[in-house]
Length: 154
Image (cartoon, rainbow, N blue to C red):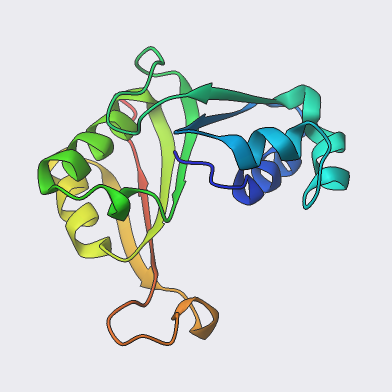
């Protein structure tokens, strides 16, 4: 959810040699340019171009049917939604589009808030762990965390 310039989307596609990576984007000029073969991601993009699709979308209203994806990844996206209700709606959308038994991974600054919402949605195996010093931004209180959860299988 939220592709930015596409680094995480492209890496995900590389890790899915037989799968398809979908990137919902809001605006999307940077990643569209990368997929078209322009810097900075041109070489890596060419190798996965046929397995990466982009969709103009808002994280609060994803245009995919329920239970469409095995894995949902969000990297530094959800905290950009200013209202609490909007962030909760984005999490609801991630839950909605994930298949039963699927995995959700969120890297962001509001990990505790997201973990609580996932517990309320009856997710299993929720873990929150701080990422290492390379993600600290050097600003107190802005350290990134990884929220990992699995959608119940049934």
